[in-house]
Length: 260
Length: 269
Image (cartoon, rainbow over all chains, first blue to last red; front, side, top):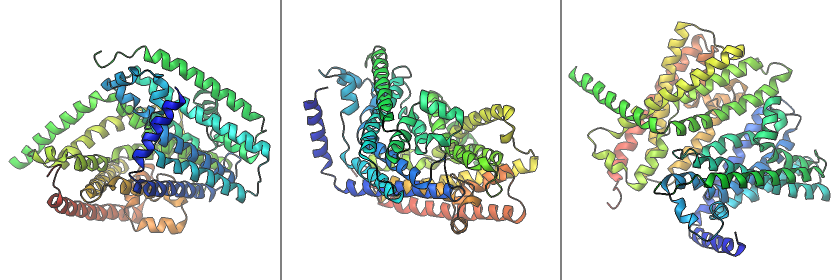
């Protein structure tokens, strides 16, 4: 999709949202409440242990920061965009999208920007930064670069997961709450994958790749991983993206429109 | 007595309608169910890792497995989502249609609750039986008296959560952020109702505060009854707590309903 169109869409969205400035406060309070809940959850676990999957408390907090950053991307762009797909496949509303002279997947995915939810991105990164201070860890330039690349890869993987799950709507037309499936899967990304039993770890790395969304970027930032590993993350993201693009094309062929 | 028969007939019809309606949305219901069990499943995964080197305050791995399996079942049996519906009904005016019917909207909600829970809890039970066949850790000690007590506690917890949900949903008469209040309540209940951990593993001060509120009676108490960890005085105290808090929330609901309806103008009213 052309960047010019995307910019125009998002400009409209921002202009619309700016009318509702109280939502910024509500969004901020919501994020702070969520982060507080997550930290208290960790505090309960760490009352009874000193390490979780061999990660110490502040390392897991870095991961929480990454989780929250990705949550911001999800809530600002993905849920209000591609998250509505299932309902549109059911009602036939997707007709209106397909009739537009733009790439359908691009338009469906990036048509909305709930700008206030970007507070989650800011607060998430701030939380990760604060945890790094508490770890007395100053990332090297290589680690920062690896983090940047791994985080970008994580966004792509999260996006691929959304596309893959929402494409199911073309097969299971009557299921309107498909986005719930993403929430269920993503719940597992709150903690380092090394904390889970072996079989589950395998699933999270290779089958439902949520390990690449939080564990890998956080590891890159804290120096748990060789910076070069970020290239593997990028390759995984590229593969995930290509596969879901293929899936989208296959799925779209099944769509029969409002009259079908 | 004709009154009772009348009500049985009404509920029969409402339940049948709710059951058939759910039948259309079988796949959606499975997804909601899946979503409902991931949180306890993830919590179990974490406690499982923590308990690798030995029991945590008396909770071994098998105890955690039993606790969280019981939690999945009890949570599904007691869950209430009415606040979300009420919020949107009040804001978009759908409540008008429901008020116009010759039966209080709460009865329809109760029937929908029962139909949904019968279906989903049945699914969890089947899965549990299959898992228990291969994994002894999640098997429960069987005793008819304990199952009867648990059934009573689950019923009270379901009623309690229903009235909490209904009463907070009615806040939509006064504010557009009723769902935010519900989220806040859900966040607190994550800790105080035992969704994250058995209450015994929380900091003692927090567990004490929880004891003065309604949260443990929503989940933790019936779960502990089911897994067989409450006895004697604690058992009596648990039931008393459930009944007292149920009465309080029924009162809150009645207050919100009568006051709210007086204020309600409906859409365009």
